[in-house]
Every structure is written in structure tokens, then in C-alpha cells.
Length: 123
Figure 1 (cartoon, rainbow, N blue to C red):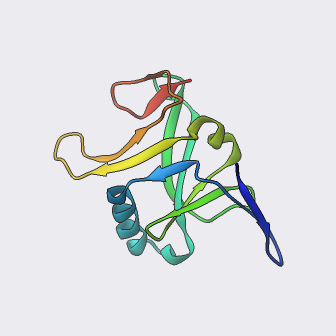
Figure 2 (cartoon, rainbow, N blue to C red):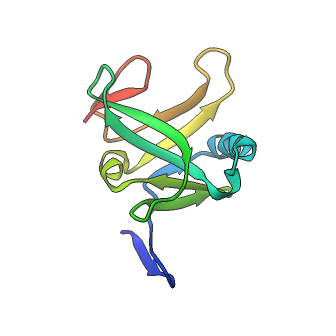
């Protein structure tokens, strides 16, 4: 259940929709430090139509939006919009430095089928 609280000028919804592993948080924090205005941004995880399985994952450094679900892992804010949250609840983002198959990896319990590249899925 989301935790909702009100500040002087906005409503903040806190729910762990997506979890970052320690290695994913470390990598995201390192990349955020290199971003212009990185101190004001967070790690946005989202879904959009596309890919070979119908929906595809996306990740970007972005500002928080009013309707976002927010959580923090090792100092890294994670933002998920309400539509993406329906597809991503329970998802874990990991990071690997492996030469083959390295990078951010998404494990989504709601995905019935994923493509071979791991970037798209079907629910």
C-alpha cells in the first residue's frame, strides 16, 4: 500500500514499485554524479509500447513528476509513473559489469514472456 503524505506545496506518494539491487544503485549513483543537474534527478524506470514482445522497458535520469511513485535505494531516488507501475510492481533492477550480457537487467514477475534481449516483455 502506498504511503501518501502532503508537504506545503505537493502530495508525495511513496511506494516501492521497483527495487534496485546494491550493484544497480551503485551504478546509477555513479552515472547520476556525471549528469548535468544530477543532484536534482532520479532513476526513472518505465514501460512503453514496442519491442518484439509488445511492451518495452526504459530507464532514464529524470526529474520527479507530481504523480510518480518514489522510493530510494542507497541514496538513489527511483521514480515510476502510475501507468508503468501497473506493469512493474515487484520488479527488481540489477547491474552486472560482465563483458558479455553486462548492464542493467530487469526481472519482472508480471512478465509472462520476455524476448531474448531482455528489453521487451508481454503481460
